[in-house]
Amino acid sequence: MEDKESKDFRKEFPKCPVCGGKPLFHETALALKARGLVDEKWEMALDSRQGAIMQPGKESSLPIGTEVPGYSFNTDICMECGNIWAVKLERVTVKKTITLASPTVMPNREARRHMKQKGNYQSDLRNLLLS
Ligand SMILES: [Zn+2]
Image (tube, rainbow, N blue to C red; front, side, top):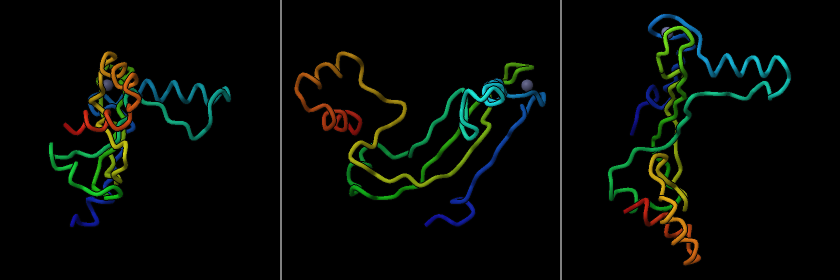
């Protein structure tokens, strides 16, 4: 089992670690909020990802509903020096579902068309991602 400290892990780096500059996407979101164009709680980032890292071949043996340690992070770009850094890092718990998918692996257009024609998109997508 993981210890409480790693489970509650959360860090934020609101300023550029290189030069102390402001993050572009965050600042843009602030400008949108100031004009009332987006919700106050809305977050904007260069990239925002969440998921679990699993050894290939192991994930398929886990029952649906299994909770595993996962990650979450947002990145942004420095308005002064162009550096890209993680503004938020977090440990999260990810529950396995029917459609649990890797955030970085998606079938190409040809593969998706083939799956849709077969009328079995979801289960084929799952098999593809787990293979
Ligand atoms: Zn910077």
